[in-house]
Amino acid sequence: MLRLRRLLLTCLLIVSIALSGCSPAAFRTEAAQIPRLVVSGLSDPSTFNPVTSTEVSDVFGLIYDGLLSTNGETGELEPGLAEAWDVSPNQLRIVFTLRENLKWSDGEPFTVDDVVYSFNNIYFNPKIPSSSADILRIGEQGQFPQIRKLDNRRFEVITPEPFAPIVRFVGGIEILPKHIVEPLVTQTDAQGAPRFVSALGTDTPPSQIVGTGPYRMVEYTSSERIVLERNPFYWRKDAQGNQQPYIDRYVVQIVESVDAGLVQFRSGGLDLIGVSANYFALMKREERRGGFRIYEGGPSLSSNFVMFNLNQGRRNNVPVVDPIKSRWFNTLEFRQAIAYAIDRPRMINNTFQGLGTPQTSPIPVQSPYYLSPEEGLPVYEFNQAKAKELLQKAGFKYNAQGQLLDADNNRVSFSLTTNAENSLRVAMAAQIKQDLSKIGIDVNFTPIAFNTLVDKMGNTFDWNMILLGFSGAGIEPDGGRNVWSVNGRLHAFNQSPGEGQAPLEGRVVADWEAQIDRLYVQGSQQLDENKRKAVYAEAQKLILTQVPFIYLVNPISMSAVRDRVEGVRYTALGGSLWNIYELRVQQD
Image (cartoon, rainbow, N blue to C red; front, side):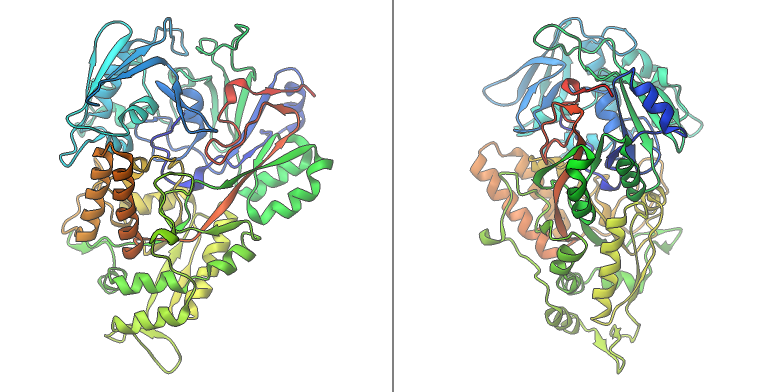
């Protein structure tokens, strides 16, 4: 199923399947009796609220099913909670029909009222921040579609104008149980915000995390694990009428790093691990003896990039970015010079062990809307001489020691950070520090905890340069509109404050930012496929010219899965577990 919000930060991608807890032997003993998979994530979740969360987590996909699902091999839409959908000839009305006798994981009936309430009272509620709301806004005015109940099984979606991805977006969003969340939405806290904004946090009893997906939560222990069990009310059954999923337990083990996950996998007690390029050679040698297979899915749909903080706003009359650094970062030639100065071939050969290609666009190569360099996409091949030329053209200069100075003789020096839990990303940042030193720039590289990084990026805005990535983009470009909308929650390089955050005065939106925003709106409005491709081609050219994100490397998507896990259909689009409901595990 398409995870609409899941564009945010790849740092929290599920990276391995691991046996958890203080006693692995105890888990193996229990696993011999209960079919289970145990997956590992790099940090604790900050919330179990799928509406307000800005994290990437497979847990939401396990707890909640969408109205429609996305085939992980083809990318095509398939029936989910809705068994059918009909689009009117003018493309302005879609009627969804729910399956019969659907239930929530607590046994309560799932109804059209739950669907209508989720959209109209939660996602469309201006007091509830949600990245999903960004991508459901239609046209220049950012209007929401109208969602109305027709009868006990049908509801209609009416759009003010044609909106090409409406079926995919409405079909992929998480629906919440009205009988659980209605009191949280109607009641307010001391600041006047709906209690729902802070509800369903990590302190919420698991029984109150109610969904429609293949699993339901039974335990969360901070810094240790999340335990899910089969949802006995799940709607899917196989061709013989057997209840799915087949695997009884799914455990997310919280590990401190990718390296720790690898150690656990190699110890022999794990079922699956995402294989990064720096571990591929080691894992490949152990493949047969270790009883696992490495699946390759081609180029990943995720992105890796560095970005500068272009925010020129102020809080309490204090700029969020040092004005001197802000002038550098907002100079086009400066950003382009940095793009030329990064040695991607070296990064691919060393950090990625040759298992990657230079990333050239925010739209993945699997998408029919991807624009290749041969078709006119600007690219930044490694060229330090070109980088120095651009810097000097913009008024920068070099002193006798080869240090880069600006026109006012300020040494060009800034901080670079990434999430410490991701060793691959730390290595990339370390190389960038070296590359930029060769053009006279002093970089202070400090990896920090992911949650601290998220707070800096989305709340305090106290950062200079960050290395991160987005994931879950899929093949539909409009899924990235909340990145390119100037007020989108993922417009990270020039972020506007979210609901309840301290106000920001004097934020400046550049003409090119606004133009990219308009192009993404136009692309969503266009129903003719050739014209849509032309719009997104123009957007990609503008993005790569202005380089708000400096794209780095597109790694090969790989995963190692134990032979005892049956039914895996691995792809870069869907990963290892997109068809979790039909996977089986052989008992040890």
